[in-house]
Amino acid sequence: MTAEEEKFEIPQEIDVNESNGSPEISEFSKRGYQLLKENRTQEAMDEFSKILEIEDNNNYALVGLGDCERKQSNFNSAVNYYTKCLSFHPGNNYALFGLADCYKALNQFHKAIEIWEQYLLHDDRNITVLTRVADAYRKIKDFKKSKMLYLQVLDMEEKNAYALIGLGHLHYDFKEYRDALYYWTRMMEVSPEHVDIRVLTSIGNCHRKLKSFKEGLFYFERALEMDSHNFYALFGIADCYRGMNQQFRSIEYWNRILEIDKKNKVILTRAGDAYRNIGNFKMAADYYNRAMDIDFDIYAALGLALICKGEGKFEEAIDRLSRLINDDPKNYRLYLDLADCYVKTGKKTQAILVLKDFQKFGIKNQAINDFADKLNAF
Image 1 (cartoon, one colour):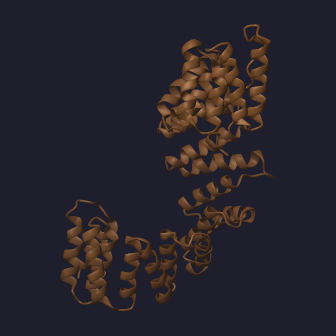
Image 2 (image 1 turned 45 degrees about the vertical axis):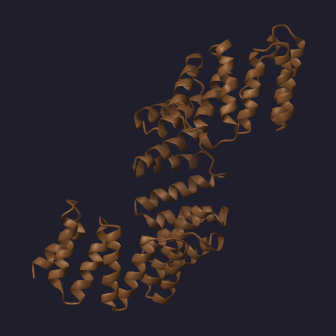
Image 3 (image 1 turned 90 degrees about the vertical axis):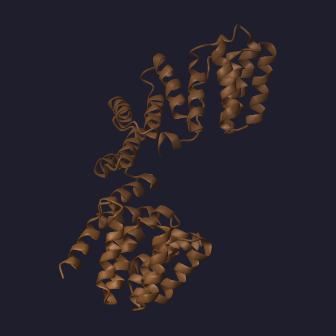
């Protein structure tokens, strides 16, 4: 579980014994935080509000009310409380902590970073805050600063789960799949008996990207043992079998996803592809048409064109592919299949012209160039 996915946690309780010598404020604050921990949020807000009746700018009350709003995902209201607290009590760690978390939740990562860095001026070894700042830098694609902070956490706590998972996500986001695999595998070593299902699917996804499909299957299957309906595990297994060219085995898992989500257009198209690749054009057409009934999908439309091509209906395939090129003029796959249809109908010159049409875009594509060279050689 990453730091951004962890449950809401109330910061360490404020020292209510320093409440300007008021036993009432101390009692209201203690009770407010106890109620908040018990998820009795409205009752907690009532207790904190009582403090403001005694002292209208009390930092304990303002932070407590901010925490209540934050816990209810009322982030803008929480920001107002934390900001008001900081205007009267600059540098209040709890207000800074809460305010930064709100900005993170509002996807205002630059603001969150600015606030967290203020917090770190007071406590530069706070692992929770360091991982949050690293997560925020990851969100804004600052690889260098994010990695530096995650590694700083690991220097302090070499098996910190949030840092290891964060480093995995960071490297995965930058397509450094082997490094992502390294950190996520280390995460498994931290708690081998209680591996988080998201770690298993993340490792599986690294193997998918690296095309080590057999290794990926192992992790996706482990994840599926933990949750037989997990979308990412089912998708990963199906896609690994697709990558291993075992389309007949992928069909079971595409269909298991569709039992859960019948209107998933992407999965309908993937299942259609699997049926088409094993030569079951009737079933393939059914799945493609079901996808198209939901909304136009170029891959389903391409699949229907390829069925025509596979059945030797080249003129119909040419017509379908030509119309698709009008909708998606830079999709090289369409030009390859259209040119191939022309070749199969003895129209080599037309096939060459189709490939030249794509090359006019100035897009380098080895498959297009190789096909063009092959046709021009004969």
